[in-house]
Length: 483
Figure 1 (cartoon, rainbow, N blue to C red):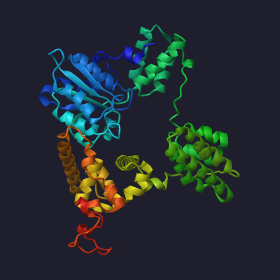
Figure 2: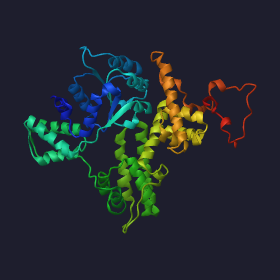
Figure 3: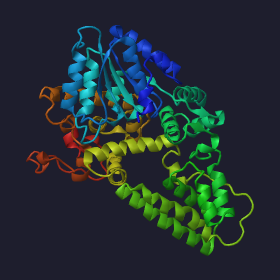
Figure 4: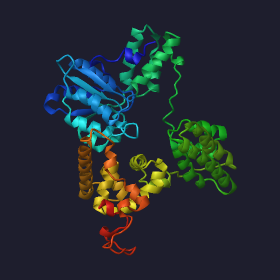
């Protein structure tokens, strides 16, 4: 059976639903492209119509499409050969233009896409044809790539926009339906138009009559808050009820453990507290296995211990009102999701360069970098760090402890970007041999090893070692190679 998302893909931008503002901005970009010649990034959650809009635009403009998607090996030489050639050449028919579409532009990293990010940045800066990049997470793209492109955000498609699409599909496919069934489908897949179309097709395969009871909604009840859950777990529910209550909470097992660990001692004491902590310890073991193996089926065992295990440890009645609060562990990270995202971005970049896990990067390598670049001193080392890991102001501020909006941090990031561009230009002269990262030293190597091979034996004129309490930036041990 033909996939309905392909069968009914919009053939014109006027048929794109739910993102009128983004659709109009995309059309304006295309019509004015000869004047600005900028590439554009379409970013937003999966299933909101980014790729469909790009193809619909090409159809409206009469442009041929060259697409490089996630299934292709997007190394520097592949991008240069395929997308680069298309972007710099004319249409196959000799008239009109080509639209180069690169999907999953936020996943240009790691061994598989070795050198791809630099090649795409170079491409969008010099392309002679329109280029559209597709990304789910705009801020996972490199700073250089974001700085070289225009961005258009596609938002989640509202239920009000999804229901008319479902009605139209039912009409075209001769499906008899209840309005309540379409409402339930739209509610289940709030924001994701592609998923709701797939669900409708799956239901229609069994029966061409669609009723509300046919729609199995797996959506969680988002009205259940974490504080209601804590009340149920710690004071009210038995093991089974506590486990079922967790199904309605939008928290991962890792975060759920932190919430319970922080608030459980406010009501538990003595033996029940010890038994409850024993259950949390077992949950932490399972979560460790998830991190080590990336096997998320172990989450169920962690959740069993966090909920049923803690509830089973309770002795007697727990009444009254308790002031629950967010985990103090998070307060050390700024208590905000944004701070944790910043930390994880830096850890991910370090892990990719150092060939280690994110956990190792957070625990063992980031503290070294923080100490080595405290308050952006020495400056040259901080610039190299920002260049090596493609860090923005907020990332540099997080590692060094400096203010994000200070001129010092902004100038460091600007110099780092210039350093990366110079390294890329020098590297591309070699027909993309190796990678850009090979031209930039990894500060974590200095953090672990202390010095480069060139500095293994100091010469006769070497300066004597400074005392440990020397505050001079010029004489910090292990930093000479980056100064």
